[in-house]
Length: 378
Ligand SMILES: NC(=O)c1ccc[n+]([C@@H]2O[C@H](COP(=O)([O-])OP(=O)(O)OC[C@H]3O[C@@H](n4cnc5c(N)ncnc54)[C@H](O)[C@@H]3O)[C@@H](O)[C@H]2O)c1
Ligand SMILES: O=P(O)(O)OC[C@@H](O)[C@@H](O)[C@H](O)[C@H](O)CO
Image (cartoon, rainbow, N blue to C red; front, top):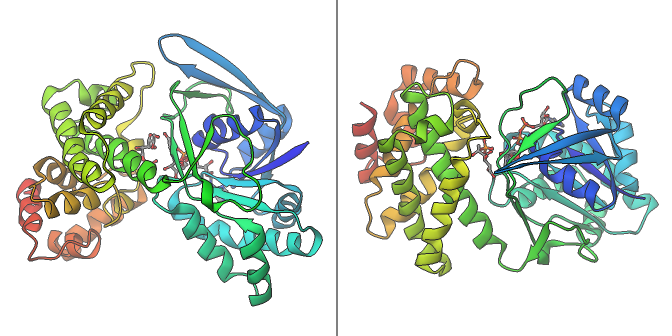
């Protein structure tokens, strides 16, 4: 049986990537830092994915196991056997898992000449390329030369809304019916594996930017504005007309950049925005604004879903007021259980909003967006 090693047995790990890999006939070995999850995976060896749309569809995922990330030797052994390694741990965790992937690759190069592909399935443009850099840093120059030939790190775009989970069984996971997993065809080592549901394309950049700077942009604006107004879920937030209009407006502002940059048909892109909004409004999802707004320092970064499209739209002569409203609301996100939110608030208190706009968002003081965002913040 083919083996897949997947880092991160969380929502996307179990509800999307692990699910498709298992359906494609892989034995999925989940690696996670959560001992409860690992214990349960090994006890049950299976779990359910509940697709919640107009009707409920239940899928049984079988042939799964778990290893604690601290059990580095065992993880490396599994990487030797594997045909594919995937991750869904969060962009901020990729650096932490790179050494363990590197030690697996280092052992594998000694024992096997078969190609391996490592796909980082994170909401980040170029996540696999970033992981590759961090893995390569840990290899010797000789290993690096070999790894360049035998290990592929194709970039990917992953799209499926998986909200925080409710219910008593730890492993079952509720998801929306929609999914899209697109991978850079040119980034594979050896043959592209056949995994139904995974699409290999030549223009990955267009897919990944369209997804992050439309869906994740709108989602973040909804989350931060919703949080400010005291709403608990994305659905409740979007039921307020003014929030819905700001979210749509932000997606249209980023859409100006996306259609210009990638030549998407404007009407089709408009349809993409509307169908994304309908996904946000799925009443069965109950997606928490604090999940969607998590890690505000990451989301306020210069390459991420708010600042990047705002700067790009501005370069095209648009003043992206809706994105600026979303950015200002993100700067106010003070959810106490989110470490980054606490750090952000501390930074604003100690250094002031101007320093945050410069240091975190990378917006120069002379850029007119600087004052516009401040205006919405105050
Ligand atoms: N949930 C969604 O709707 C969704 C959709 C598309 C993409 N994504 C992306 O997928 C990634 C994962 O998101 P999620 O919603 O599944 O988060 P999650 O918190 O549910 O899952 C992350 C998992 O990674 C584990 N983890 C943390 N550090 C680890 C380490 N060092 N080694 C191994 N495992 C570790 C956590 O214990 C957790 O189980 C993120 O990049 C996210 O942006 C999420
Ligand atoms: O996962 P994050 O923190 O980057 O973003 C939060 C949500 O916008 C995100 O998880 C979406 O639900 C997902 O990207 C849908 O495909």
